[in-house]
Length: 496
Image 1: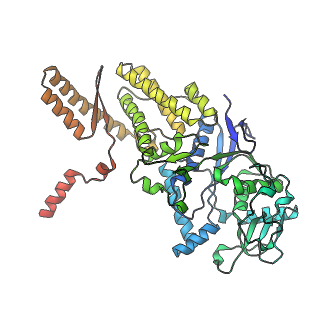
Image 2: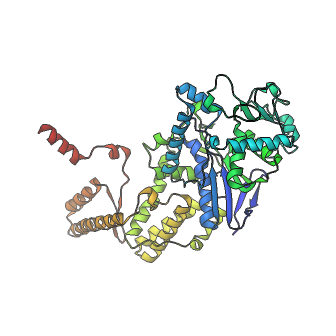
């Protein structure tokens, strides 16, 4: 089947055809590391991680993914002043927090993750080309500013479908040296109140790069003059991506062939952001929520749909993950879950994913397969149950929410498998004893066994084919509570 993606530039679904057979080059705008990441920031990384996985697994492409780090920017300098620390210390600290958040949510590492500060020579080269071609100019006041002349490029506004006269003025630099207030800054001359460490020498004056120039230069360095996909949040379409496209094409580069944009995470209808006081930092959410649950929550909606966060959002995601995990735990006790070939993925799942990454439809197939697998287990049809389990593992692996993946620490080692078998044998012995007690109408003893199992986190479900067990999901309070045995030992030591 053909993968179809919604191209923001053409405003239509397009068949995806890479520029080079078997290979895909993709650039996604990473974070400006002026603060710790919240889930609104991270959604883009999860959305494009799903795309990357599907390109690789579903279509066999060799994907080169570039995700940049904007480590020099007006916001970075301002936040550093507010925090009373060097800008490079602040941005590196937040870069590490971002990396930790992405890893916690199972986002695969980028092929390359360039920092803007490491590509100033590339930016200067691109800027010189634009000046030579008549599309950029240095400010006549000697400030060191360099601007892109938007009226020199007739296609300016094509990405977002705007005419120049209808656009707002560019507020990214002092307009004193601009020919047109809509001209945007390629380079910003150093100001007296800015640290010397945040500036670099150029033929036009000492200063630092404009945001838009950074991404064009980094994309070119790591993906070449033309590449397949450029992605990012919907809020980046204008002015950032519009300006990237204009300056790159004006310099003679083919640049991106497809443009994809993910929607926001909102709270009470507003875009999530620190300025609104509604930011939910990943590190804090993970104090109360399992990483796989948060990943599922951010994955479940179509990437172009808004996600409205509310207090019960993660409970719904947790219940969905529990259903998947519960089935896989049951199935694994009937035999090994064998890997499923990509070609054997359910047709409905493939069709949904090929339709502009229709994850909602894909997850519906996952849960239908879970239900069918549970029914097979109830009927002691182990073959059908294990086939369903293999399909569930393969599908959730594509989406990054496979509970058995090593990343989530489930079933990833021989020790885990041995522990599972030992636990199953012990619980089965208890369930057999309970069944004998029920047959002898010793219901008090049967209830006692069930209560003992429940107390240690074993959930029992009575089915027509016999009792089934699964591990209860611990609450955060239970996980944080001190172990009673260790607490007792500690008390004895204290008394001794």
